[in-house]
Image 1 (cartoon, rainbow, N blue to C red):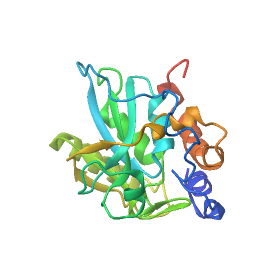
Image 2 (cartoon, rainbow, N blue to C red; image 1 turned 90 degrees about the vertical axis):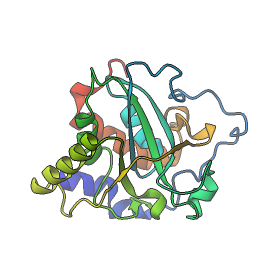
Image 3 (cartoon, one colour; image 1 turned 30 degrees about the horizontal axis):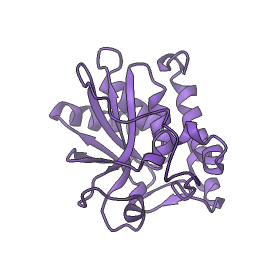
Image 4 (cartoon, rainbow, N blue to C red; image 1 turned 45 degrees about the horizontal axis):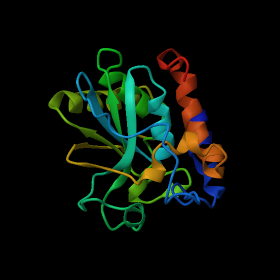
Length: 224
């Protein structure tokens, strides 16, 4: 796995000059309806998980494809400014990181499974304040827990992955209490499916999504 992740998220990607969010579509002022959508209006029976693993486009799609996941929303968390815009987050003035909020059925998929996928497949948790071509604290790896049990799961999963030497370096993911999640602009929601021709999606995001598909095939929805 180490060599795969290095090739997917590592130095080779730094050659790309584009970054997540830099390719706002021309129709962003009147975007088509997202295939991923926004938070469910009925939360009965659903739990929430909040992870930051670099560009939210790939994270949203990767978790959206899992059985038991009702909805995934791209947004911002971990900072101090209310209702931040993408431009403000990108300017590193808010303290936020690009984040996804996952609405899932715990009877079908567990928080432990989501944590396993987050730490071993959807991104490289050993990169500090970056993911591949995207550099800065707004792309840092972070896991936001809501309960003491979730904190224990996150810390135990990190210890397990480190002990197994899944990566060449130790995990640097921040494990911090959840405070507030701010949904990103409409044009970011479902971006992966709405803009498959985007060079960033093709060269960066797709590799991360495919990595989750390869390592966790039995957990994928059918059809996607």
